[in-house]
Length: 291
Image 1 (tube, rainbow, N blue to C red):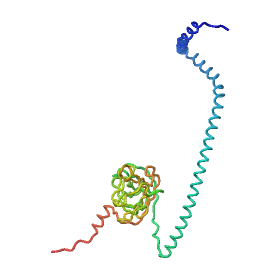
Image 2 (cartoon, one colour):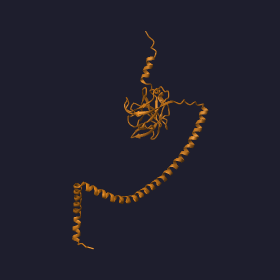
Image 3 (tube, one colour):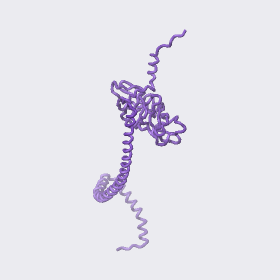
Image 4 (tube, rainbow, N blue to C red):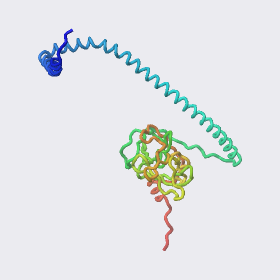
């Protein structure tokens, strides 16, 4: 074995970096001078290293898969525990619901309660969400003789969407509850306080004019009120969420991803279209002549 002196080793150490730089430049020049040769060398190097990479990658892939499976097992244990707790809570709520259903049936029988007739509705698909007079509105495609009229209430599978503002022979437009022109009388479900839901042209409408002694609570459910005979009572609107000191409402309806809505005719006359008012005024009997 050849033993080098300390000065020789230091000289070799100092020459290593310049030699590597020179080799890199030589390879670069060779690749520029003969591109075909460089391509063949790269292909040969790839063919040589590919089996080695595959051999190294297999154990790494197996170890990674084992780690992922272990993580899934841990998450399954926690998810099973959470599902057991949720099932237990659901059983408790089921017992409460059955008791309330029996009590409600008894009270209805004692009061000889007559339920309201079911509202007729038309299902329509949302085809556009731009244009029209209002900033926050959607256009519905309805078939001929759809029967949709202004003032009817639009809902999706979760809650209130808005009201019909324009109708055509095969289409209708819905002003959403988030539009700045929208005003909906609502009830705070826990306190039973009345308020007005006002649109902001943003994602969340805000609450106005609630009683001073019963401010809206965070997370409180908001439903429609029958005030002014504009909406039926009890339609789900959303939940209260404070932004700063302002009580906003997170809509229950998926207003940003509307696909299909149902337009209900509750036969309410609280908000009349302008042309209906003009039509009634035109048909009103003339005032008696006073000399």
